[in-house]
Length: 372
Ligand code: FAD
Image (cartoon, rainbow, N blue to C red; front, side):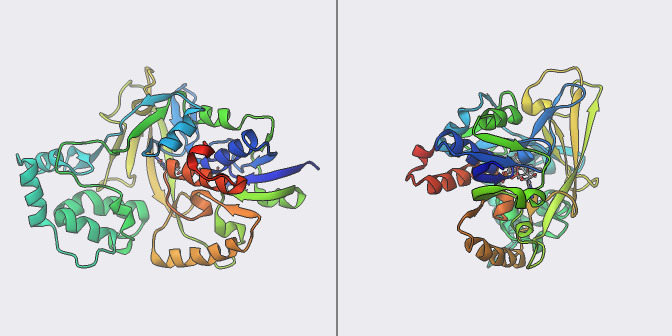
């Protein structure tokens, strides 16, 4: 049996960044395990049977304000500049989301200026003394009608609960604008990996010191492994055999389709807050820039069962996670990292930063610049 310095469970961003750094910079031997048949975690992309690059687990758009994260990933990919824009289908119209000047003017037939829109928001916003829930955030900023049309139905579909029952962090992520800026993100670095995410991951982990063990659940093989330290990016509650109960996650079902038309919708993502069981439709060619006579789209249906995608931000779940965190902290040679390992909604760049921070700690270096 080969002995490894590190066993890393999960070949998504968290596991792959740590494997890459520890192998290439610290000369460690790594066994990288994933129960899926591929690397890349939820950011995995692949060519479908028609040769169109699709994202198997829903659209992933890279954006960050961190020069270190961007510099780090740039060692493994070239980039395609891409600014994400989303439209929402409301009252028979396709309108910009996040809500901006054009959203309100086109929805109601007004011709507000930015200043007038700011006054309008003040007049319709409902005073909320203590903003705690996702409903509080939106009704206090834009009033009840826009909340009902753009947020309430979408959030109920996405999370299976009313926004009034969800932590404010869910809708706080979406800004409200009084100008015409229709970009979904305003980060300094907004790109797509030129050849796709999977090609980037391959460049990271195809190294002699990293052995990959795919289609393998850690639970099934852990007693046969010999290693010094474990990095665990799977669900923290699963690691501890759900001893305090299950941490709730929201999942998704993806319906991937290829259509015999070159172009399907005006932007890469259209949200359906009020109609249909699905929340949004993604058209990949608009993300990747690929030219192809056909086009591939994905419908997303939120559900409770299935792969764990979104930790559900409710106070009782945070309290349950804290109990698992306490157990995790008692295991000095096991490191929990990533979205599932720390039960937190993180974007890709945040997971990369979290992984680089753990790498710094493991090898004893001070700054993030040094780590990349
Ligand atoms: P994951 O990518 O989930 O990787 C964990 C891996 O661990 C998985 O491959 C899993 O198979 C493996 N694993 C778990 N348990 C075991 C086990 N017992 N044994 C072996 N392997 C195991 N972020 C953005 O920045 N921009 C976006 O546009 C964006 N869009 C998203 C859209 C959707 C639909 C979803 C779900 C997420 C999106 N994200 C986006 C977030 C992004 O997916 C995550 O930040 C990132 O993938 C987290 O990386 P990770 O390594 O923590 O987890």
